[in-house]
Image (tube, rainbow, N blue to C red; front, top):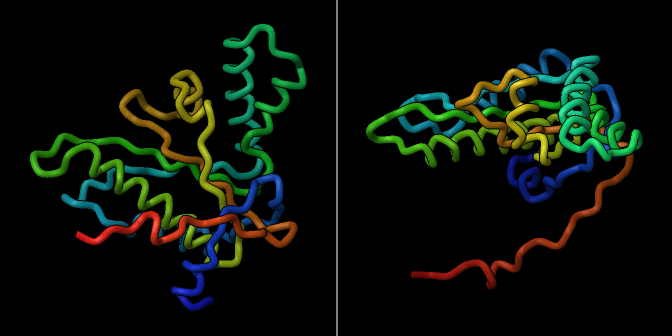
Length: 187
């Protein structure tokens, strides 16, 4: 396993189209999800949950996405609909991180949403530490209530991201990162 600091310094997103199988083993997936659930969580509310898309579940989810897209875009070509159908099929595993808030006198909704974001980042980092490529994406369908309902997301929930996980098919180049002197101030 890589040194934690080196892992964090080198972590990059891998495009799902640059991923292939196999995906994580059942034991690796349990590790990834356990780490995803081990985040700051004021009030111990666990204001997030995970939906796993593996195997043909990725195609079934694509049918939901494409069906909603076609209904809302009657002028869409067959090729456009096919693109929507394949949204979750590049990586062998996609984890949707679902966020919801619970009324609490000391934990505002935004803090609960940040906990869900921390959970997503932990999933990405855990997958990377296990040698997989990972990418946290959204897209129009992450915000569409018809798609969300079709994926089993309740009315009081939202998807904060679809995390695509798989083996990388080629080396992944880094992108420019912020210059610290431009983003850091001292009080």
